[in-house]
Amino acid sequence: MRLKGFLKELAIIATLVIVVRTFFFQAYNIPSGSMEPTLLVGDFILVNKLVYTLTEPKRGDIVVFKSPTNPKLDYIKRIIGMPGDHIYINGQHIFINGKRIETRSLRSEDYNGMTRIIFQETLPDGFTYQSAYIQEAGLIRPSFNATVPPGHYFVMGDNRDNSEDSRYWGFLPRENIVGKAFIVYFSGKTPPLRGGEEHSLTILTGFKQLFSAFLSPRLNRIGKPI
Image (cartoon, rainbow, N blue to C red):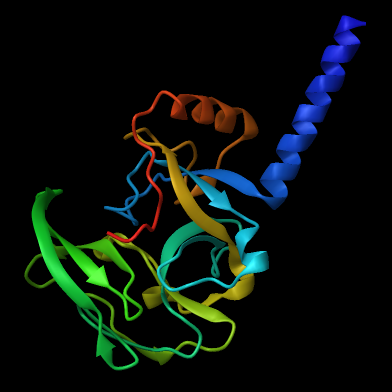
């Protein structure tokens, strides 16, 4: 009888976990540096999958989405351009509706033998975050000049010179967005769990990392204005 009761409780817990992961929250691992310095390699984040059924994505949100070029892959980037915005990019300079994104240099650091500058960027609505650019002579950056169509967004990685984003494959369809990343619950320079860029965790691994979160001194909200 005890075994039967245990199995019943286990089944209930497993069902609740599946429901929560399917409709509410999901854990993800960050194995690439495309969102540095906001998200580090080895960070574990939670994604709110329900929020965009109630509200629309906002400029500055960090979103997880199905890659437009390969729907089997989940990517994570920041929304820079909204539907109807005109985006013009010339090297390191980003213009939204003719207004250049305000930038302020914060610090420099070594990045694989090169110098990387960390900037504070302020979007037109006042949302502020950090971005990174490599300072190296002869570095060629993609240019961009187009208007975001209805039902689409323009997204970029915060680590601008190490991110495959809308500058390369175009606008992100609204229906591809999985949810909004809202918290780093565990951080560390750990190896990625799988190949590719950003991939969801298994349920068991998610439980292990959530347990580790209670032992971690770092608990930061993603996308909080600086």
